[in-house]
Amino acid sequence: MKTSRRRAREFAVQGIYEWELNPDRPASLIEKHLRENDYFVKADEALFRTLLFGVLKDAAELSPKIDRYYERPADEVSPVERAVLLMAALELTQHPETPYPVIINEAIEITKTFGGTDGHKFVNGVLDKLAADVRPDEVASQRSRRAH
Image 1: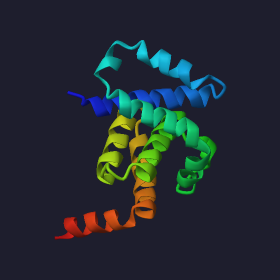
Image 2: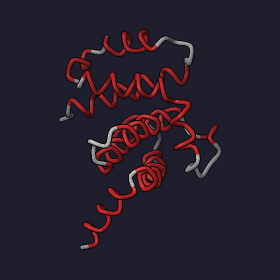
Image 3: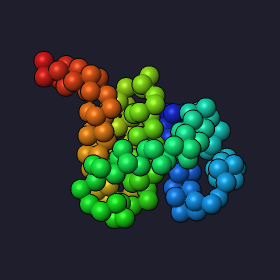
Image 4: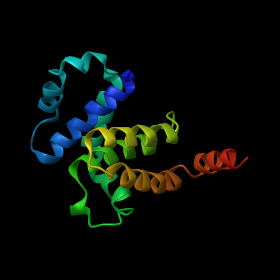
């Protein structure tokens, strides 16, 4: 059973993906298109809007934060993986109320749903590095808890 927050993230990723393929498409049209899905009513609408519109607004700022951790040329990253990474980067950098392991786990699960066979491993690697950079105290605390 998917939570309303998982559904919100899935719809946000679909919207970000649609925007990546059609950068001139208005965000309002992307949102309208996603709302036509029967399952949209089960999504956390506030989280969906925060993620979709946040990424579309801040993509130029978020991209360099994730691009530097790629172990392949940026143009070889699938649009699905990129959409997931942008969404997770927004949460990691702008939503400290959500624990970083939750953000990374959600990103991995969404990538398993929509991405390629091993895309989730790539997403995990990038987000682990980003989390260590943008939330060093939280990551250190989590690692220390695991060690004990």
